Structure formats: structure tokens, C-alpha cells
Image (cartoon, rainbow, N blue to C red; front, side, top):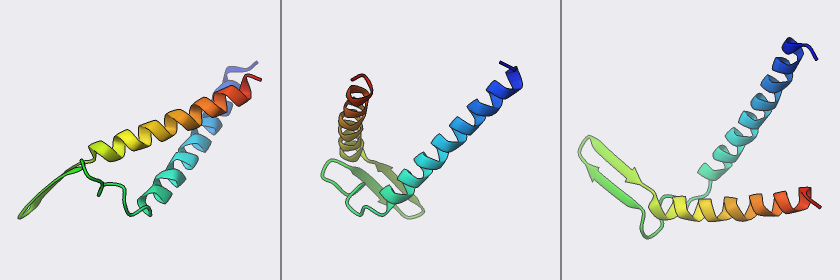
Length: 77
């Protein structure tokens, strides 16, 4: 296979993955409770805001682990 053809396919796959990821992030911003759960740290001072979404990150990690495990199990049938 030609190396330019391979590189073109790889760029298309990466671009598609970035579009999907961007769409998911855009939809996630519409979810109002992310970043406001108990355990999410928010420090606000005049001219300074720092957010550390610990609980939200753990929740997203657990959900992604479950979804990816289901996808892998379905693919390996």
C-alpha cells in the first residue's frame, strides 16, 4: 500500500474521532450537574476561579470504562 494512501486514511480516522469527541464534549457541557457534584472543588476569588472536578471525573471514568468494556466484548464475539 502506498504510504500517502495510508497516511490519508489515518488522518481521516483521526479527524472523525476528533469530530465525535468534540460532539460528545459539546453535549456534556449541556449536562448541568457535571462540575457541581459533591466532591468537586471550586475556589472563587475576585479575578480568579479554580475548578477541580474530582467527583465528575471519577463518574465519567466509570461510565467510559463500562461503555468501552461493553463495546470490546461485542466486537470480540
